[in-house]
Length: 108
Image (cartoon, rainbow, N blue to C red):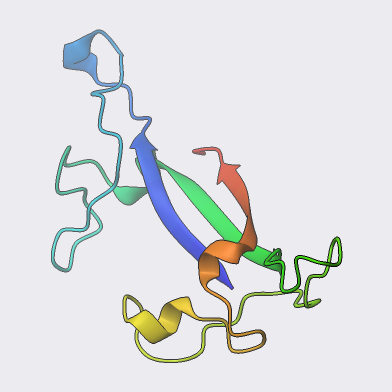
């Protein structure tokens, strides 16, 4: 499963001597692509992609490295934010047991 969100604003502002305004997170305006905090377009915010891969939950403490072999987190169902969306459909573990690989894409 892949999650994408937008982090800090990288737009240099003339009235701040070409420095960033310090906005740390893109927050959606109702139907606009402008940030609710700083007013900048979403493209000025750094894009972060999180990919959840292998499950690392130890199922038997008597045997070392006894993981179940699940290779990718697949949400069990339900809408995003619901408790069932945090459970893996393959292995039944919580999303927190799956390794997350974070990719930060530069602002173009």
